[in-house]
Length: 85
Image 1 (cartoon, rainbow, N blue to C red):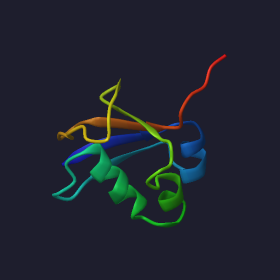
Image 2: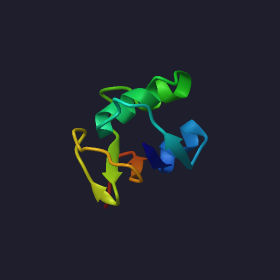
Image 3: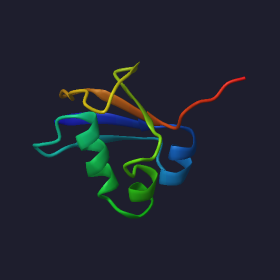
């Protein structure tokens, strides 16, 4: 399955990449699966996307939960929580 993944704000700075096109292996079926797979890259990826870190995700430009199903050609965006004032 091919996905387009975007990283915003402090995640982009930490990871050193703003976007990437990925071919993910079988078994990566949900947002949570993808996050674990990306964290498995180790180093800054492991710390930035670690379970328990407050990271928001949008799937095809809509906020989603970790159990949201992925589909070929989907776009995901990872970003830190946003505060306003």
